[in-house]
Image 1 (cartoon, rainbow over the protein chains, first blue to last red):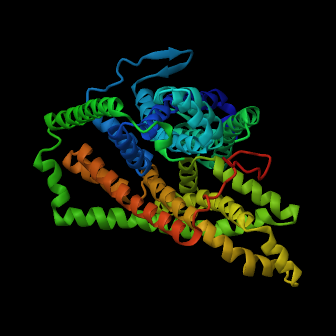
Image 2 (image 1 turned 135 degrees about the vertical axis):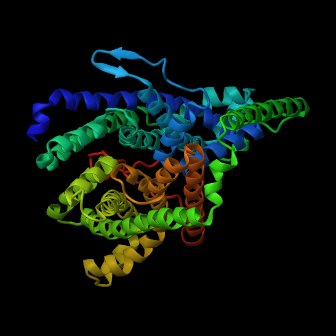
Image 3 (image 1 turned 90 degrees about the horizontal axis):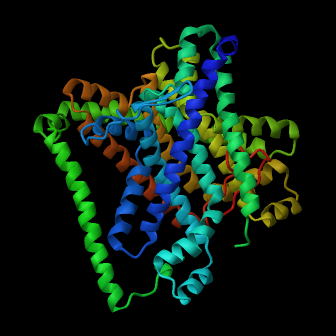
Length: 228
Length: 285
């Protein structure tokens, strides 16, 4: 315990990175997932196939492999995050952070797509028929009628996906981001006699983030709940 | 709702427009894939000596036996443990005694909210880093704890999904609590739970890849040895990802077959979300 209490600034900084990873990847994966679901249910057969293939491949690949592939192959594709040199307060967002965000985003968006697709399926048929009857094209049907309702219906599964993302940020530890799990390993290496206390401290940190997000999600869910 | 409800049956002009979209989309996707392949080719990633190792019988054996087999072994042991743990915790969560229910609930919530990687690192240190086989068991134990907690939630949802009349009828003919659970509820719940359990196998299998962080044996470990020796990181990652995808797709096929065969059209189980602390509120869509 004391190891963490004496180094509280390192502890909070590590969780700061975790939260930043979660926020950036969470927003980006929601956007990409929405695009994917529009492709997945749209009228263009090729895009449907492409989105379905993407979701199948990504969902069945371990996140570590995604990370590894991205960090090995990205330089070949000319994707490097050398330009990423953002400093906010004591936080440095560098190439490792950029690569972690991209890997987490690509991974999570497949699950967002699946969650949203279930939400799209939950929108009553009459809504869609009415939207088509007043002459809306596919883009209009999706953006004006289906997706707003799908998001409400899909809020619980989407919240679960984002909670999984909070936990998945820990994988960034393997690839050089100094977030909570990496910090925990540093602590346990230097204070090996206190590792149980250290573990509990870091577990509590994750639980607090998960709880806070879950609380927000439940509030929003109640607020948005509609009779479907 | 099937996808086709979202748009009208296309008329002649729309058919023509969609044809244009399709062609453009094919061109875009093909261009992206071609560009990626060309960059890899240009970088020499498709040269025979980078792939030769995957056609050399000795290395294929290492990859499949030391790699895939160990990974499957870890996943299998973890799921086996998780089913047992999930049963204990799940029945605990359903107990009428608050003294049993709350600890079970606490354990389930704790292990579902903590990242598996964190658990792995901790169990690794707890077993002793230098002990023989400790990374292997660290992975198995961490995955058992995490998946056991998820399966506890699956079991709770599965038992609650059995129609209430079943338990009431059993009580009416004079069965005891244990009998109702073992003879009436469990056999029916098991059928409903089976697809969810198989899907959890996919999760466990994917998470074994995290073992690389604690130097556990398995596909990721072997792949690191291979790419360090042959300097073929990208091809190795493609092969390892393909192996994972194939095994996972087989499991997914099995899950949907079981769903069709034993569960029918009933929707999959609604699980309470991690960290929903008001205890057992369902997240039905």
